[in-house]
Image (tube, rainbow, N blue to C red; front, side, top):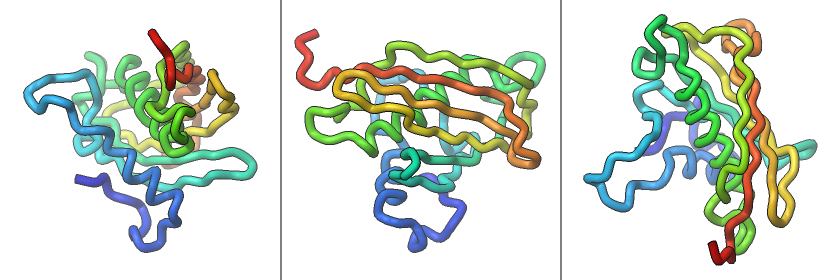
Length: 169
């Protein structure tokens, strides 16, 4: 089931529709297999916008911090934030990929998050992912998670990816 959008689906351009279609993530190979992921439906993830650029390719989403994503004191858990950043920056990678060039979104080389302020349960936030560089073998995507109500930055991230297409690993 596709995630909701903040605008009418018919208003999305071709690239936005492509990013939106990738935002749900792939179905599991085996439906009985449990994998580590966040649930876009649980946190009310909503696709907001995407652009190929210029200046840079980007995509943005809104979501609400729910108890399932929080630590014992009621703030967005750092590991959950990292998972969300990993998944949504990878969506941008897939949207920009081509055969032989990050066609599986590559693999994470480094994922660095800096936590600036807490994100309490019930907070609506915006995550913006922006492509910094996408070379033949390496890519860097940055992300920010900000409070939707005032735009204050809560988390900044840098996600380095390695292209594994054609790899014999």
